Length: 325
Image (tube, rainbow, N blue to C red; front, side):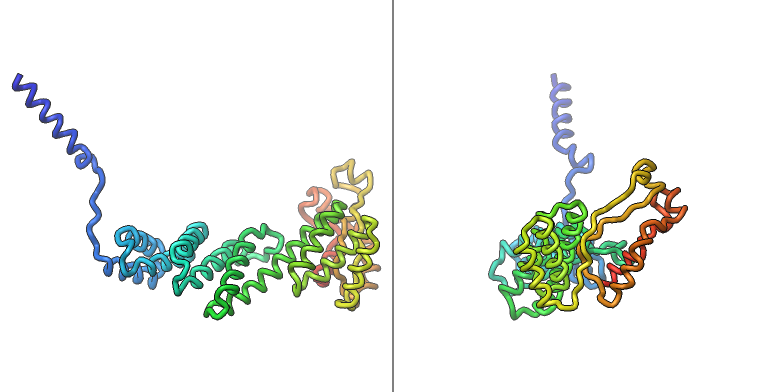
């Protein structure tokens, strides 16, 4: 009987101390607030963003009402931004705004939030390759524009306001150009209502951008196809008055012959759809001379590679559109 009691006592002791035997929770040493804050600032100065995030998180968890609590939350937004963690940076900025709506540095939180979304699309490829950002999803650009807009409206005297305003103008031009790309996509598929709506959105909401004349031309072309001649004439009149040197390249739908369809693009001819876009007036005659034979000059390499390699004979028209833009 005594042996049973001894065994039972040993089992109880082993159960209670099992966590420590098998590497359970380790007690984090009690680090003073000042030491944590200094370590975090040193990590930020050294560019060690991961260590800075770790120290700032520990500082906020250990001393939520300490003297460095609010500053640590601000620095955490910056550390997330530099560590390329956009979702965490935006969440930290939203949390700071929610907890400290009257903080003297709240403009900095809005600026960092906008800057995080502004840089989100600029990945490695976009920095070193000639990619057209205006054709990509504008979700991050919209978020950035909204954050900068709040900053300028609520804190126009902020030291970050001038830079935010310049970035907003860039984003405005980018968003307007994106709408033109979408409208051109709809025009190629002869979705005239959708194309007209995209053009009208640019004219009404994204004024003073280089895409406005394109938008007016698209509206005129779309309304003409829809039989709304009064609206088309109004768009053309606004275009003529405000952009007298602008010349419209009339829309032409995509056309290809039966041989092209039967051979899956290996043989035959194709005329790509051309939306209403600007053309340099000095090159109108050259364009008329080049457009006729361009669709039939597809190289042999282009034919045998299913259009992947070689020339399709449309370089001239593509260069002209790019120059007009």
